Length: 93
Image (spheres, rainbow, N blue to C red):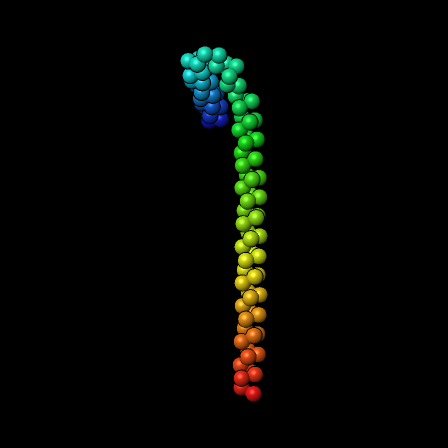
């Protein structure tokens, strides 16, 4: 009996949403053809997918740049440390 209540509630809620959008879209001229919800949903999903792909590509490039920068920093650090150590050994001798 509880499941019937939930199903009936969902059915009424869906119908209410549909009526709301029908009335809202009815206020626009040629709204039925301009706002095709399945098409809009597909385009929205495609746009979101493209945004995520672009974001991930940018993030990948940023991470690669950060890794290259760290590598150069540490390479330069150890090169400088080796030079400093060799000059101290030569001065001491």
